[in-house]
Amino acid sequence: MTQIIRYAELASTNDEALKLAGEGNRNIWVMADTQTAGRGRRGRTWVSDTIGNLYCSGIVDLKNSQKHPWQLSFIAALAVYDSVQPHVPELKLKWPNDVLSRGHKLAGILLEACTAPSPCVVVGIGINLVAHPDVLDRPATNIKAIVGKTIDSYNLLEALIAYFDRHHAVWLQSGFASIRNNWLARATGLGNRIDVRLGTETLTGIFTDLADDGALLLKLDSGAIKPIHAGEIFGMSDAISH
Image (cartoon, rainbow, N blue to C red; front, side, top):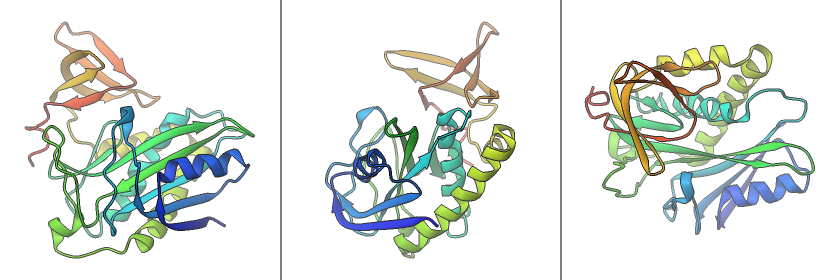
């Protein structure tokens, strides 16, 4: 049975989960009412000093698994979508691991690996329930601002874990194909012209599909199809306005 460990404050739920994972713990989710050093992808700060938002991290065992561990970000995104959708009906998933409401970021996901004493992945999730940061190039929102009601963070985590376990079981049993199809059905930007930022380089093209392993397939102006395994999408204003 999954155990939830709740803290009033942590530096980072991912750091705590990584520490617990290194001690051999599995099947645990850590949550904190506030974080003092939360982080997002590419080393960015995840503003997380507001009580009422959900800050959590789960330890996922990879022992005896031959799957691609980064595909867990799609599983996490589907779990966030399914747990939030009853409260916020207009949701989209943005590659690789954001959940949007009307083009504004509502939740983010960060995967970090742990190799000892056995391989696992810590899945960090932040959901804006009552507040959100103001970042010019990455507009955000929160559930309270959208629908005018407050969602209890612990209850939402319980729902999120149930959905995560369900999608995770499908992935283990049947592979990525079903996860991929479910994610694509909820995706934003598909079929649209987008910019993909790769460090210091930016590529522009049409987001045509997901590869079988989860890479974004970008059709360049030359007609070539380029698989993108890591990057950030921008320039989707037309794709996410509906």
